[in-house]
Image (cartoon, rainbow, N blue to C red; front, side):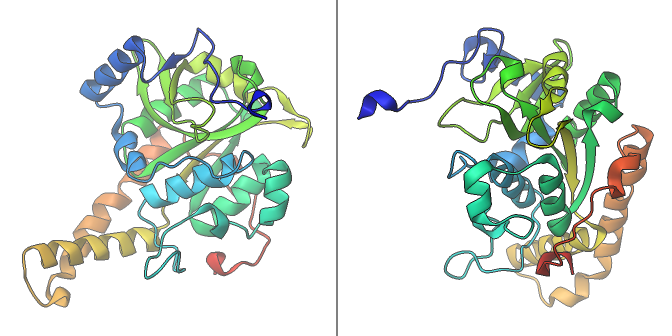
Length: 285
């Protein structure tokens, strides 16, 4: 019985596992350089996909939780938290278990719950991709999710989704936080290798894959700031909460200023509104 099953796979030799000697060195140097800022919020919500076909919804739930977006839905007990089974508005759970989700379906799901910029590789350039990786790796307000071909990286399997956790500029390598940890550990690949893995045609859609930039909406950022102020006041045992709400505006203003930086780095693209959410789900209202 066990002969037909697997306990993980070996990474191709050109990819560095984060647990390898070289992977640990890259990770340490990345932290010192300040290009792993996106890693810390992701690691607090990082999980292994619960089904072999759930890489898309698993990656999205990790990112939404890393952004501290309140799903406004009960998860377990008294807790609200994003989980894979809650992300079923653009495709049913049964459909996703059968064949996963496509690039467009991921964009639809993400738009139901956050702000997303979808970038299909054939509409963009390697240089733009590298700029986006470097910018996202150096910040916390936006996360980048790859939609790539495993085969193009020399891995087994076909299409896959995973968020990135940092960038090593000197060696031009990206940390991919693989959502299928039962198969491969988090690994480093060069920007060129990852770019090339976005370009192969997806047989399901007839077009290439790409990547996504996911962030909170302005309303969601305000909600996050309110909760942070509330927690801060509780820690200081100060009351009432409403007396400190004016301070929220300054915090929100600092968050708002992040958008011009994104525009400066050409992250806001013409594709942003091409893929809409047509499912009329509760989350998009």
